[in-house]
Length: 163
Image 1: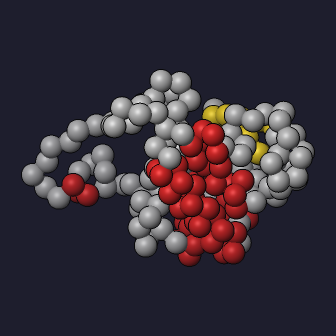
Image 2: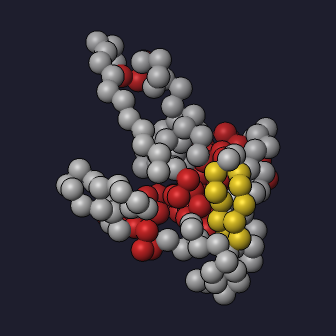
Image 3: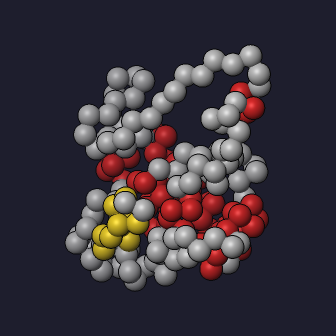
C-alpha cells in the first residue's frame, strides 16, 4: 500500500506554502459541493475516477474510496467527467462524504500491514462493495464486478449498477 506524509514548518500561513497552495478543498468543507464539482469538470475529458483522485480538485479521495464512492453514486469510473450532470455531481459529493465518514468511523482500510494511530487496524475493508472484488457478484445486482486500470490504478465497478 502507498504511504504519504510530510511535516512542513513555515512562518507563513500554511495555505501559502508552495506544496499546499494548489490543493483543492477537503471533502467535508462547504466549498466542495455539487456546483463546485460540476464547474471544475467542465472542459475536462478525463475519467471521473481520475478527476476525483486529483488533489487539485479535492484532497483525500484515494483509490479505494474513489471506487467505493463511484459505486455508491451509481457512476461508472470510466465516464468522462465533463459528461456528468449536476445531479450526478450531487450524488457523487454525497457518496464521497458518506464513504469517507464510514471509513473514518471504522478506522480506515487495512489491506496489509496498516495500523492507525491507536495501534489498531482499520475495518472498512469489511464494508467494501466493489474494491478488490473482481469476478465476485455485485452486492446490489449479482453481476460480476469488473476490474480495469485507470491512470495505472486498479479500478473496480459493476457494469450494470454504474452507468
